[in-house]
Image 1 (tube, rainbow, N blue to C red):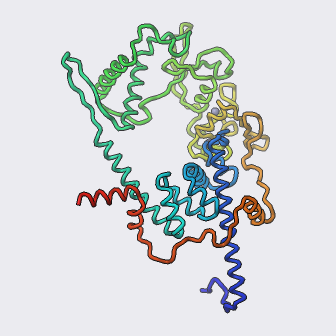
Image 2: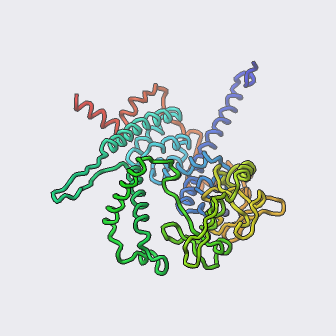
Image 3: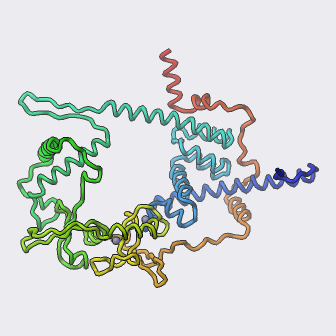
Length: 455
Ligand SMILES: [Zn+2]
Ligand SMILES: [Zn+2]
């Protein structure tokens, strides 16, 4: 094995030259950290003002597309940028080049406005490795507290059912959030089933559709609960597969699919109207059951259930596109989008299909984004205002000597950075993480005090 560095005699000139090289590295690093603080400010503002919201699923996805960060790194930037919005001390230390981005990134995983000052002390005193270890210990304390909170909620779940003096049965209870959501969805579904027939099918919108006989919500809830109980017993308490629990059924007239301006109906099973753009999207890639209605709207014929895009073609599409084709997206699971809709005569062929994730399928049907295949076979996306949305954005212009520009920029704002700016105060003593957490973490302190009090 050869050694990596050439063997040289440490003459004073060589030592001096290497020191200067090291200082230059340290100074430029401090400048980059200070510039990163500015970058994070800009990202936070862009995020808060929804600058990415024109077709991208998140600020991180936009960042990844625009500046070429991998998605994980982009998410981390956005997370740190948001966190620093409420942590002025850490943000200031980064902006002055006193704390490296690596340390700030680690500290923002646990810092709150309440603990920020202490953690800034940790960042100033320790090396990046110390900070990382303290943050890991800190999170453990936080996670235990969170687990205790979840366990407490779970232990407090209860449902009391008892008979009142007049013979009515009273129901009262506390459910965990996800169980509560399930119950509310089930009650909503049962209410729809019981009361959709009470609605006037045409005419006034929303609340106006509910006929005069519809009882108030509390009474409908009571009836819905009865239906839930009956249904559960009737089906032997079989919860079924997750996807079958609640389905959306859209009734749409064929002319509406072909041309949104055509009159016709486009309604959900419960009678709520959806836009013709939405029904076009739902029909783009769906199971299709054709029902023929007579003049009075009665169903006279029901065809077999068919897939709009047959399974073989879908596999070929998935294999060719691999994921969502919207610029900067690439989400693996997608829906087949007909570039020229089948209801308008577009063929269901590979060349007329593109894979889009749910978010971006909505973007092209309902938000005005356009996609077409160019003569060279490549997809071309356009923003709602017609401007092209390229796969790769144009590169930013970079000055020939970035250090000079950064230094000039920082000095003009009164910031003088040197090779010593970001040095930790650590003097080489051993780090006792357990002791450090006990001293610093508010919950750990409380635990220590509780422990001491009970002793
Ligand atoms: Zn589509
Ligand atoms: Zn997408």
